[in-house]
Image 1: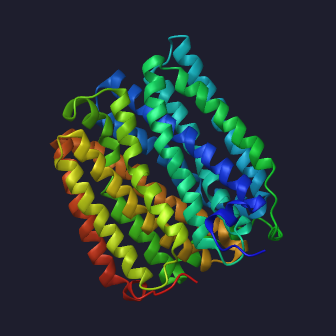
Image 2: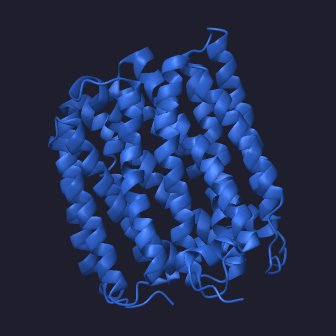
Length: 404
């Protein structure tokens, strides 16, 4: 069967089920960012607590990253996903009950964040390892773009709906998250892997850290992953969205939902472009340009006091980040053998998760010291400087031409 268009790829049955289950899980997680972020800030009024929320989700990943990667390579990746989505659904049930009964506390919320962080630590490398097995042969970059597009649709609708539903009842978003994660778990079971599963090696210490050695010995993957870590680490302005929504842009939970959806709107638009057009030249340079563009858009967002300008800046951040994500993911997956994808995916997720959640912690801490605007502004400038430095440190990565 020929796959000449994005529609053809979406008709590929294994990819269909993968697309739906990943999108639903992402949908639920995006609802949680609005509901939990607003609830923490409403209960504490502290930027530092918003930063600590990111740190709480990151720590399980840092502790379990090597175990999670080995689990993704040793066991049926679909069953790993199902287990994670079931745990996430139960956590959402606990948050819903806490709200409906009026007994939810800040420690309760942070405990739930730790559980969600643990489940995500196992879910992400398994998800990344499954995608090459369900994508049509030779169409991984386009399948990655479509999968990213599904995530971005969830990221657009999820936060906006989460904000509106939270305004009705603080417990309602968590009930909706429960339904989405349970549905994702059912759909995961229907995924058919056309390529055989990798052999199940004995769980030795050497195998456990195999992903680290592989990344260390591959300059392309090391450059890609470390660029994401250090660039986005300082660009975590989205952690400050509850502060911007309430104190700078003077809006409510619905406005926070729109701001959360802003990056996804730009990302979805760029996904449509990338699903139709292959990146056939100067892929490495384009990746660096996208990171620099992310920094510039972050600076614009930092200085904005108008919600329309903030939404445009956030949409631009999402668009250029999608270009970078598609190139980075394709380079990592195409350079990694299937029996290593779980462990390399775990290392990649550690770096990506660190860049996002430690970036949120960094932004929260700096905002507590200097204020939200200076924190976001410094993050944008730092992102640009990191991209320029990595272009000098990894010249071979800058010269990558095609994703093949």
